[in-house]
Image (tube, rainbow, N blue to C red):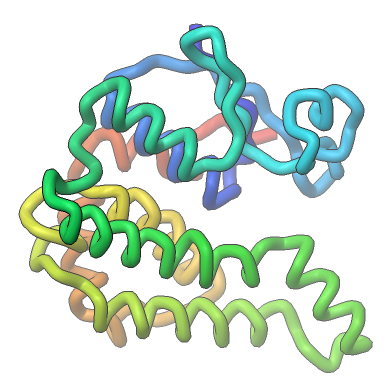
Length: 206
């Protein structure tokens, strides 16, 4: 049985849940409560020395880093998350990385808490999140190369990365109507069972 060590609101975990669903896989969820710092426990650090989620155990391997996990699933389960051409793969990765490597890291909970504390609370968590998520989604909106999907006419790695950030945007009160292309893509993805199953509201909570 596949094991996923995750936290229900973790964007990285959300991505991997989507990919597992697209692969038609079943898995057991082992919650790592980030609010209680369980990611820093000896047990979890033995699984992932970075102290991050998710950790994915499958095929006799223990994998860390969500994009590496998703690409492994893509390659071993033939998900088609990356186009066949080199330029297509480069463009999908650019969209994916705009979320996963630019927007998500600065909106990680431990980063935001540190910024708030270091500013003596002159910076609020809400202001920080609104600024960086808006900046990231504005760029993504301009980069989109599809109508119903982020790229082309099917689900790609970019869509898998986008949806958790859409969830975060709404969680922090952003009005998605300012992003009409993203809103249209979101409507398409919301109808796909793998995306529905992966949504935080449908997952195991600590």
